[in-house]
Image 1 (cartoon, rainbow, N blue to C red):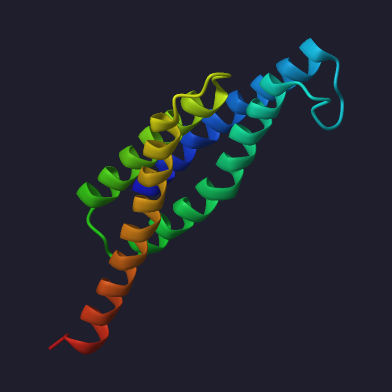
Image 2: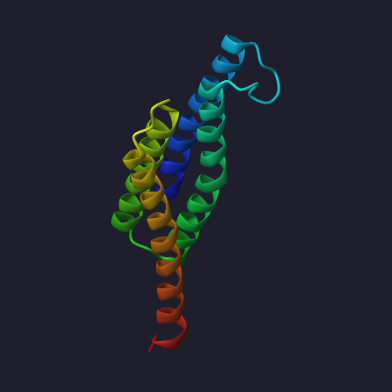
Length: 132
């Protein structure tokens, strides 16, 4: 159930990002596309990037949890994922983007995906090949 906590937190964050896109669409009166409005384009990409990476990261975290990964490691992964998405969102939404926030956010997100995948494989092999 540890992963469920982070899925809920990130679900709320996703709604907040959705509302930011809606607000920008209303501000610039753009229904489809971005009509050259860079602030809207950035809001759309923050939202889209979140939708592209977070579900897969959460799926891997859940599979690691289901495989027996200890809650302390799941909390570490969840915190890193939340921090990564906050960093990425804050950096990308800036018109004069401080690139270090985007890079940090993506590194943390990739790290969660990589560590979750490695945990799943490690737990699998330990259970199937090294179990006495």
